Image 1 (cartoon, rainbow, N blue to C red):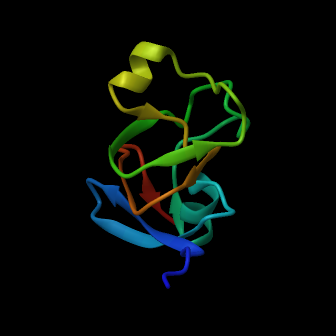
Image 2 (image 1 turned 180 degrees about the vertical axis):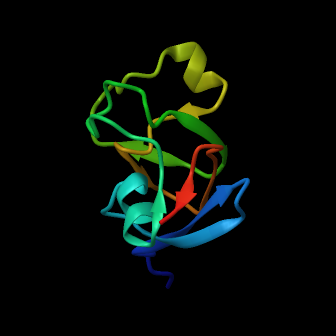
Length: 99
């Protein structure tokens, strides 16, 4: 019998930096807690300041339709401020900084 994990790995490229991402926490918050600053402004999925590319993994949104168009979603763009991990996740965030 397998159990459902309560956390996954979040990796930020091009820094090659990783941290734990609890399933009940937004990716932006998990990164911030671990000492990484991702671009942000509103933190509610509307301003798009945090928009970055999902290289691998799956996410779920807290809002039914965050500020990402259908075409952008198809190209792999996500909003980590309102996205929770459903698996290990690799994001490409050129503006990420270690704090």
